[in-house]
Length: 471
Image 1 (cartoon, helix red, strand yellow):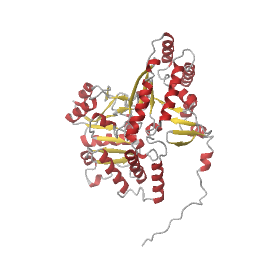
Image 2 (spheres, helix red, strand yellow):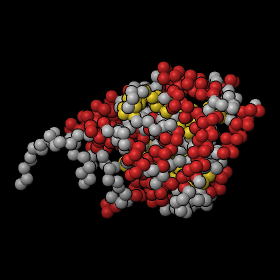
Image 3 (cartoon, rainbow, N blue to C red):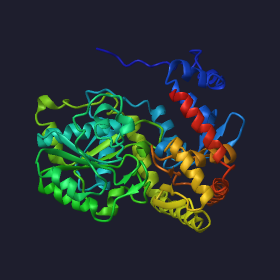
């Protein structure tokens, strides 16, 4: 009989991660030589080649001790800010416990607890499948939909972004991500945004397994017209098609509700969440679905592992998920998301009368898109036309680059061929940080409204760099 033995701690093994962290001078060189060689080139061209060494809350710090305001939030991973104290303590607690994790031939207790908690948040669904990433949850939803309906087609929307793995890429509505990766069977399954007639025309064929959508599209922060998603839900049920809400970025309180779907009073057959589900510290994702769908996939005992993921049954990520839900409920995160988003939206909107290129400002909680429009005054019109002739992707960079260079604020362009700057501020952003962002943003706007000169010279530099790279 095996006897339990005491495991000695390898505290004196001699390994320490600190030397690696201290020697960060080679970070860009290593990426250039051993990883994606284009990323360090792009970062250097934009002036984003910073050596970040610490993060906390809504801020980052570089090796020189400079503080940055992070309105990117790891693409929405850090809804509650970086290293939220509850998340850190939960991680420490789990490491101290040394939970019997990833046994695989077991039913991990914490995963069941997290599944139960998520169903309480999404009561029209019944079961949860856990995996590692948002893209993996999309792959799962596609597979589950086909198993349940015995149909092959998946409809998606123009400009949709659902991930970059091959299945997720097949429902990606942005050509720039699909180009170069061969043919997709779904090339004819893209629906124009908010076009209910086009959707019904495809659903009528009764060969569509699912319609996947983002309640708020991440590429552009496009918000559906009131009623579209409800109309789509009714039609999908009429023609036997499942609805899949991709809440990977819009979920977990970012839009001021637990799910952005709640704004439209819909009950999707499947809901996908990831990113901030674990507070940003452990990769995790969840597919929350109706019982009938699970029973179509896991139909017999010999199919109990017909779909699984090595890291899906991860007790550590489940613990972080439970902690995230606790933070969401006990620290008024939904109210904070609405307050932060409205503060930023209203203050930017107040600048519109002064700056003719400032267009629509779209916001659902802390998902914010600032769109720019062609100017009417002659000089600015010349600059706008020249820049857009050189590249349709450049103008938003004339905003995000000086925000970083001059004010140490991290933001992003929203997508290819869009004159949109996207903000994903942490839900814990303070009034001081909001005011600093708005005042900095206005200074960049002032520069952008002076042609020639100002930020337009930067546009020429970026255009030359792009043309040099393409030659």
